[in-house]
Image (tube, rainbow, N blue to C red; front, side, top):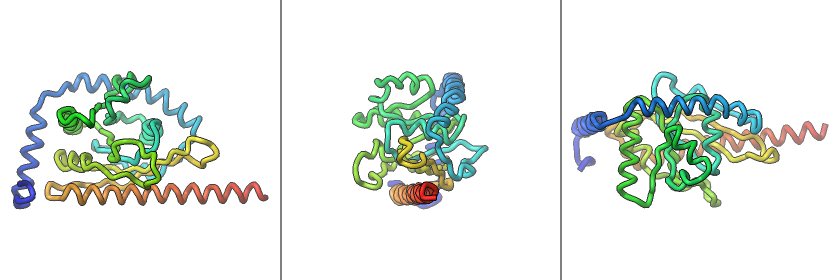
Length: 243
């Protein structure tokens, strides 16, 4: 039905949808409390993480300073959140995480700092978590989504991207900041890299599937750039050893 609408009708439809979500109850005081906790923990954890793993961050200037956004990235390891937090800095982010993660030791950290959980096998829970993400964005906070939905432990370069991030961007009018990470947590693997792409704008008239594929391609290119950097770095280290 939406695809059958004219451009003007689609623009009005998404404006009305945004107004609807803005009208829903939202506990801004509780969110602010979670974000203060996030900042407090990040101020302690980031320096420790950086000292141990020494992540290399590229294109951080691509993060808009005066607007909240949807961060998205590939997903390789259960510890990816920590290098992402380190790269973005002391800027509160509400991660979308699986409900099973809340049962882990760090689940308390996720709950305290404003993570939004989802049971992907439960249709109602998926709808509720989407609503919570949209309300969080429309009330001025950042969110983070892994479009692959789970860690990529296969030989596939990138898993298929779920369209949720783009659909939410289309509903809220918030831009997407693509990121690419690697999982070189071992010193022998080369540098731990985090690379930011240019923000992506999703219009009310855009096709969600097409834009999701475009987002996947953007992150794929960022991953290749990280790989090229690590390969170049490895060659330089070999040259130094030979000298």
